[in-house]
Length: 249
Ligand code: 13P
Image 1: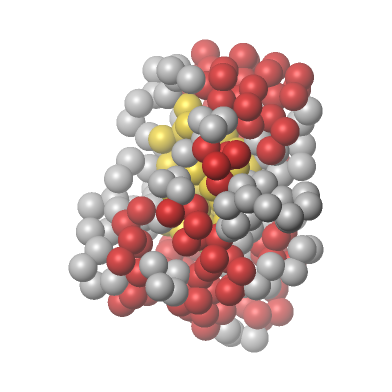
Image 2 (image 1 turned 45 degrees about the horizontal axis):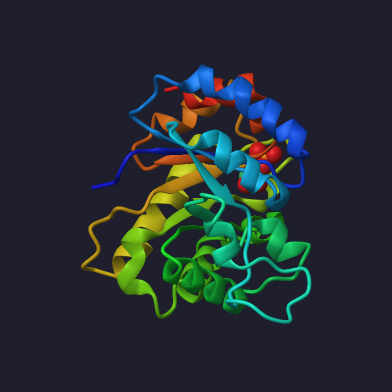
């Protein structure tokens, strides 16, 4: 049984500490009565602490956008899971397409990060998705299969503690989302893959869709039971717009 559906905001490299404070103060009252779905904000690292303080005792969860897998040491510029955890975050996005394609993260590195997030007792959201040329050459399923197999290698027994985000690269930040039907097809494939990787899993993983989700199209995705939530970039940067997405279904 899939747990509560999850609507997540990925702010990417947006918002200073003071902008984060302003957003959260405006956002809390907009969603305060919602308890039948999970709401998650993933601000940049520098805003995690203030966000954690403001979100304490609310119905809104906190997540990081990335992490490093080592516990501590000479890794200039990196952020450990202990550092993230102390801010009150309970989720970490791992393997976002921008990490893969701008910063060169590969499936093996992403696997180490997902493993480390689990070990820290936090919940990873593993992102997968094909590039446009991969979709056009008909290898979407193959690409997603490889990303899942390597990304979840060695941690298959913990699959219920991991959520997956399907974010086709060509739909991210372009204003051109996948059709809900295309997304649903890939989501079904991901669900089957998770079952194959761990036939004993209860099916608790949420499979989120991400890529040009807006208040106007969110319900089109959420009407399919295969789509267990959304990961929203641009349209999550405004509290009104993100609250409309949270309440769209
Ligand atoms: P957009 O919603 O801006 O397309 O970004 C999606 C995304 O990458 C969320 O992680």
